[in-house]
Image (tube, rainbow, N blue to C red; front, side, top):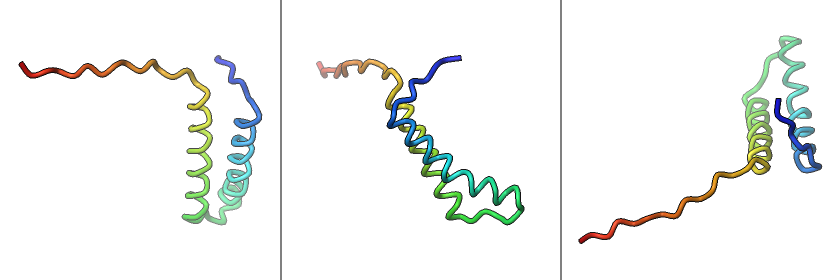
Length: 71
């Protein structure tokens, strides 16, 4: 398993995802239903988490663009 360095920025995003997820999870458990707004909030929170993780991963080196010259 890889270890993820949980800096304060990533920790804050993770806390936000948990904050948004908890009431949705409880609504599902209680069979109260989940609204489209709930789904949109969770989707946005998950996207923020994925972006935060991506920002901390090594990025592939950019390859120079070689343009073909017409002869």
